[in-house]
Length: 356
Ligand SMILES: [Fe+2]
Image (cartoon, rainbow, N blue to C red):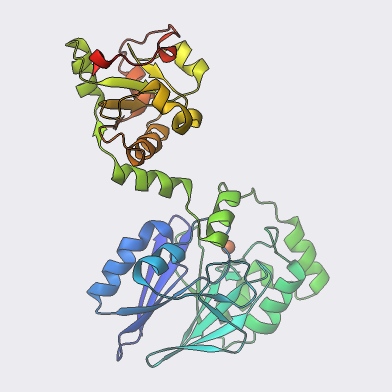
């Protein structure tokens, strides 16, 4: 078996492949590593055939949907999952064939109702069901400690003690364990009584994942995360540095028009000299009024440089083909102690044609 483990933060993901046929699969791919997966698979001479999510992730962004679209590969999940973008739904007791490898599906609800573990040869990918010296939590959407007890004691611990365990998370830099080691020393596997186990799980006090709602939205629907939206806009627009814009302002250059897309109160509290104002929320509706000439060379800024990047991407799709985003936003401008203006009148007047 060709095997590689990837780590980003506490998330673990896996590339597994058949040495004879070079067929391969990714298990729990994470969105920030897509290029690495493809590069490593290519370097190993592997041909990706499946993208497998062991469950609906609530604490990070799955890379499965993006990679599935990019490479035309099937996204695989457990049959009952609420995730809409799944191409291949698998059920308890079924297998996926990866050349000479057999990927066996165990339905192991508890962390989520759609959790499954994948047994492949001498190892088992346990998702967030069984972790190293811990288990997945059961307090997130569709979690169920009673189901988790059955999955752990009746399914996972029924496997061969020699099987290596590769989980979807580890926060202490550990890479694997075995069924036997966990049976002997995992603190959460020491209480076999279901009531004691459930009480133990219910006493676990963990904060909610930072991006819980966004991660569930993205992972269930295949929609984009905010970071993806900004990344895509960043690739689609040019930027002007603060240094370059400052130089132009100092030299009195009249070939650029500056547009502030923050809220009005922020604009009135301090903005760049001669900047027009149009809040991002009104951009599409009022841009023709504020900037009537679509050939205007527009430099757009916001506080942090992200909203302005999205705004410029929108303006370019609307035909403002000379719109650029200020690299870094007004926050960075302010840090450089460059001058701001505090009047609020500029946004109300339409741009004059001679200011192009
Ligand atoms: Fe999870």
